[in-house]
Length: 539
Image (cartoon, rainbow, N blue to C red; front, side, top):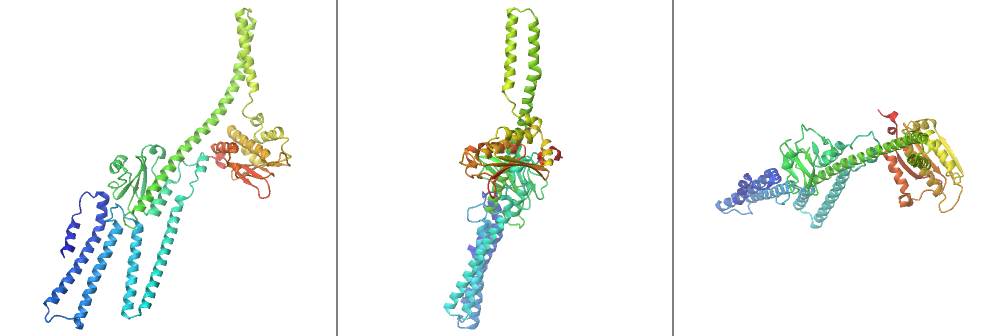
């Protein structure tokens, strides 16, 4: 009795230096441990009472007496029930709160296995007791026990598979694509992914937290911006208080007082704190398991990485767009200044000096100015503008017509043009640098079709279709040929680095490049500009 009653005094005074997580676990496990000790004490009391009754009864009782046998059976059932209940409660404390295991958090799979084991043991004991009561032959008892084990194993396997399917269904929104390419290509898209939806998918649907918040720290705080959160959160704690709660990577989970009832999960990387995940109470009121904390931490780290990477790529794309526009403006300004200002000034200086008395110094000055004038004139004449003259004056389609008629006149047997008026007007309204990017990308596609359309043959009958069509506020420029088609291995080789370069340039203006093999013969390369690329469609 002392062995069963003394633990109650220990449970009233939990040991010190167990840490915050250990204290929370012991607080949750204490009712189960107290109940287990009380059941064992009750079983001991029944045993002691029965022993005293046997000693003090005269004449000594015998199991041959019906009343005595009935009393002993009742006492035996009570004692066995107390022992079985104590074992069950002790197992509940172990698997539910990870006591006696050295782990600060429980494991959800242990709890499920324990629950299945308890159900199996109860069902098995009922079947065995029933076979003993009806005095069934041992072979039939064995068959019933085997059938019961098979049924429970099938149910356990089915529950495990069903739980995995439901888990993947809850996690699918987080594992799905975040459309990062579209966000980077569209200048008017939001600055971050649906971080709140991702956080709700992981912490709410999968882990089961009523509310959660993701607070970036360190260098990521400048990139992520506003912390994503959901649920009832009046305010987020200051980062200094979170740093005091999470002092090192070894202490990665700690309860906090503001807001009350929340857990702070540290997101450590390379010895530095990248952020803190705040988890509120669970919907079912149970404590968080070790798997749930690890899953929430991994999801939060991915959300931070996605937001930071998206912002860095967005800044790089914005800088590339600015450089494209500035380079085009500066190039045009440079040629205009040389042609309209510098050369006339040099010519005027030559005329003034030629009218003066021709001293040796003046003749040398005139010669130097004349040499500079000729060199600048030769340089502007020899250096063709980066944009074809037809593109600057007539637009994209006349420039492509001139390209095919001039450079590729002998490589193609026939070229069919399918130009929609609406699409042509939309392209004409694009800024000049966007038309230049489209022109050079289309030029690369046309040259590739003429160069690789015949495959290994030096010459073949090759036709080309140039299609410019409008769709849903955007335009699509397609280059089709009837050649040998696409080689999937050659698309990713170093010989096709031009396609990767132009794909990146198109992405910088919000467009994208796609390649596909045609069903019958040939290939199609298409440049697609969505509606967001056109200034008239932006609000």
